[in-house]
Length: 640
Ligand code: CUK
Ligand code: CUA
Image (cartoon, rainbow, N blue to C red):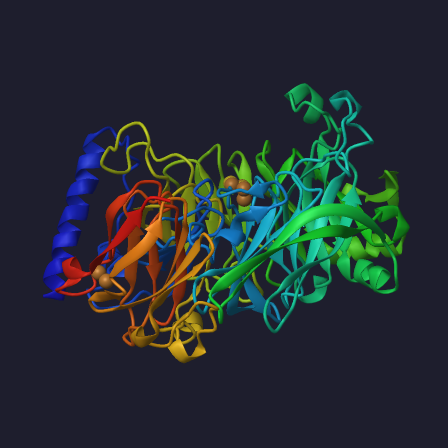
């Protein structure tokens, strides 16, 4: 049976290949398709994938979970956006998650997920992700696959060189893309230079619960800070940030901001700065930002507004920050698994610049500097250069590693992935991407121990890869087998939103940790009821609290009277199912929020403010049993 299916897939693939070649190779074909290619991505019904991939959703604000090598979508995890599927950001419990100092912001632009690490290896506790637009960092549990915490980042704007973590998850780091007045004030934009600051924020992570707390914020010169990566192994304790617009232009027309042949990678010894602030260094500055925490035991989030942040002026901590000149407006800033090579991809360049951590330390020891920028020493380019990859491509962006001494860099303009050798800098392979690849991801490729079997290229432009869906199409990812000397393109799959980056891991890391069911005896929600017998309606002035139970296939209570126009009606729904994977949904006619989905053992609250007299129905929105259509009720609304 299985071989028949595979034969069919092979046949279809072969047809598609012939077809694409017949179309003047427009679709890029697949080059040399090997005969066992279908088997390599085929996961038979009932079987499971080898790896998890967490793809950022970009402007969808969310994170999607896929399987590798099948490219099957398992879940969309709501992070920064309201999500009707589960009621995230609509239920009373989760609304506080989207609170900010600007108010309730139910959307963001999620770019870079990063899985927590211990000793530089993925540990599967949490995954962090940044909100780019209204600067925020989220922590998502890899037990429940739910967003558990969001902290706003003050003084930042375009929170882009985020959210990368140090090798024991001591810090999740957030760097600003835009420099802005700090603190914000009304001033002429033309006075940008020397007045605007770039905030690099080190957020401490509590190891037991993962709770985030801003430890300090470095106020750097007014460049743009693009991407960052932690040192690892011998360079643990350092963090590296790519910068552009070191001209400090307030308008990024090419003549203004791409004048300097070289911008910088900023090397930051965060351990030194940590020591400085632990000894009382730094200046507390007023700064308003929200900190939102979801408690799994009460199934409820709370939002707290914070009022100050500890800032550090780089010149006050001599020896903690250095600039490494890097050509052509570097975008990606990646560190190899051994922590020796710091790769800066000049996005207007053909070559990839690789700096040496050892050489950097030697130059610092010798105090060999080429001047300074606002009091920060600039190292000499040739002193820190480890090598340069003559790639033959154009527009390098991001690099990942396979743990076998190879690096893989994406080229946006020439639309390809180039494989090259660390240390010798020779190009060993290149494969086209369809089309214009941004990030790429090798599971664990951002740690000391990559799991270098598959590579996922995330492409910005889809064009003709799929059946047409009008002018707007989903982006496209491609899976390559990188287990051999040459990369092999295996599969295309559409993604959701704009996947900027992804993080992945072996399935074993998470399968046994993934929570199956919330226990009702552990449910500490203030409006939870332990059984349907406790279901009731309580009035408190104009507020009505309905303690409701769901169990296949009935709401208790299901006929509710005594509600008046102008009341605030809270449905606190506890799902008393004992079986794994039996949610019930709830929605009310004319309700101004979405439905909510309540998992077994959970309590969630939906607010309804009746405006019209009448008898109004509600129903379960999730097909839960043969009697799902019987799962309904009525509410009688009388005049105020
Ligand atoms: S960025 Cu998208 S291609 Cu936000 Cu990581 Cu480089
Ligand atoms: Cu409960 Cu359908």
